[in-house]
Length: 409
Image 1: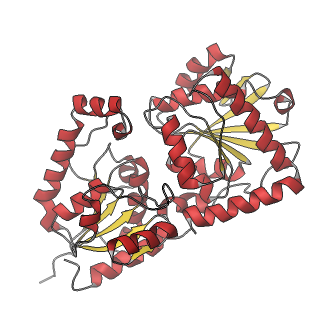
Image 2: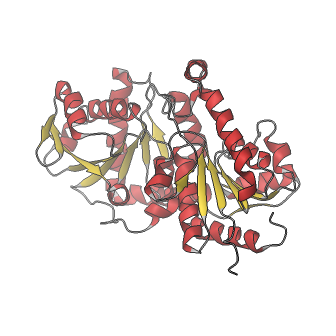
């Protein structure tokens, strides 16, 4: 008689960036011969689906993108849309299916940690949503600290070395930093990875991945570009590329951009105000590698840019994700490589200040003498805040060790 196939590993995650990291781990485990399934707690888990990873149950996406906790309005919106009940249903599904899994891998924050504990199975945690860089000492929400001390949680991995040291002391157990899987998709394979040299520099636009917010973010970016100094809008001076999600169509972009003085060209470009903006789908890594400066209203994509030692200019919007509060927290997380002009989100003053700041940073990068200390700072912060590439394979190897251990169940 043939032996039964080994039990699968379950990936639990709760957000777009968390799903990406979970998916990368799932693919790496599958390549090692391990069966994997996923239970995204927020949204449809597009990353898993695109990779062919089985997603459990009927999923649902909400207008807040799982970020309602950042404001009272967002919390009320989630309540009215039924997201708390949906989450309870997802956790109940996990509880019903728990006995089929060899190990649970929780990626994110308190919610997947709670799910991993409720499963009753051995679990490992990649605590990507929390960092000691925010406050200097991490204050975990209750009961996250209590859960992470349980023997059922067999290993805890942090998103940076500072957090690993902090949590090791707080939890009274070893917390390790193995790198961040989300960096791996962009760490290699980018075309033209050298920085642009004067007179041509590259500016990458990252309007985010959540709709309809991404379209509103792109609108703010177009308004900022129109305010760039005249010398930057000279032909051949600045190459512009926008990294876009597939759900954001050229037709939608053209309709939004036309009243702002832009025209959608047949070559997949927006033309206006003396500038050309190339619209890019499926070319995120290449666009990021080419960039001298990144104009960003994104979460995980900004972290990937910082991991590649790119300077980032933030442009706060009205959310639900990329608000002024989110941008400020992101600066604390990712360090001095992030720049943000003052002013109310979306105001004429803030956009003008942002355009002036973009010109200032590009000017500094174009001056070899002035650029050297900035580039050194960016590289140092990339290593400190994000860490080296290869986190996916290191975590997958550690998971394989747990599966092989007699105490994994």
